[in-house]
Image (cartoon, protein in one colour):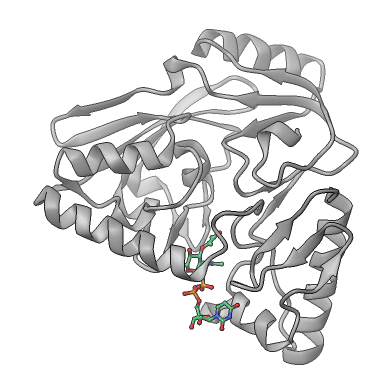
Length: 276
Ligand code: EPU
């Protein structure tokens, strides 16, 4: 899975499937369901650590063009789960549609972003989501409307295995103003996060609105190295992987950080990073 994660770490997957249609996806899901094979859904691997031992199951990636369509109709934007989030943000800006600016610079797919309600200081994807089409692990396809979806801090109540597509409601605005906002959000990120390195974004959720990064920073752990990974010197909630790193190094460093923050602040840090 090294090719498929931003960390460029992780062992092999037993099966890797890129379905070309919903029907193909359904066929494989049925097979997995009948044979009790575990299913994993990969976005862009930008918030994911795969363990060195790999994955005994099927990894799905919705890369095919049938899962990568964006359409604009009646003030609603419809995007496939595999659509690159930054492409969606850009296309909305170009059309003078405002509401996605808070997602500038967040790597990943629409499906992945919905699953964890991706966002930042200025808002999250849940703010603009109208409806979502889903498929569960038995192959049942259904839809959830805005009123049925709960979006919290980096979480939703969407439990279905597959997000297929989603509709978003944005408001018309001046493309230049949207462009300026995108630039501003992007610059803030660029100045405070280690963007040109092998990392998976923030490793821990912010506990009760305190910055996990600030807490880790105060324990003096910036720069701490285990094997091929270290705590970023730019933002302490990022772990950076270097040549020779393995997933076990990341897991060990996560434990060191957790322990240190617990000892110093009596705070149990919760992972934002997904681990397979
Ligand atoms: N800070 C430090 N030292 C550090 C890091 C941060 O003192 O090493 C301080 C900053 O100076 C600032 C405060 O902590 O005063 C907050 O930092 P920042 O603005 O970077 O925000 P954050 O709470 O650490 C959150 C999200 C980021 C998102 C930014 C900006 C979480 C866990 N993190 O970070 O999301 O990009 O706000 O909107 O919610 C991610 O989810 O992967 C992610 C990177």
